[in-house]
Figure 1 (cartoon, rainbow, N blue to C red):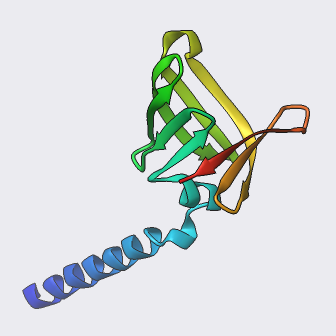
Figure 2: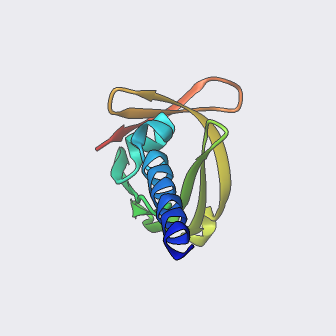
Length: 117
């Protein structure tokens, strides 16, 4: 009986490990997240570190910027915490190009294109 229970626990552990490995595959992550996570987005003299833990930090002409980011329902969403005058959450459609991310304005026109470095 003990041997059978041990075998079941081992089998369950192996199954969970296999599931975890499948969930960590980059193919399961949307293309925008895969392209920007761990990289820096630059636009003019603004540079934002897009950290894999979902945080943003960087520099702007007005000073340091801090916030969070995620891709949700195909949109780039960020919440700016600092500077306080830019604080808030926005979500925008984006187009991923070759080493660049273009934000799409609410009216459908192309907005700023950021370089992915």
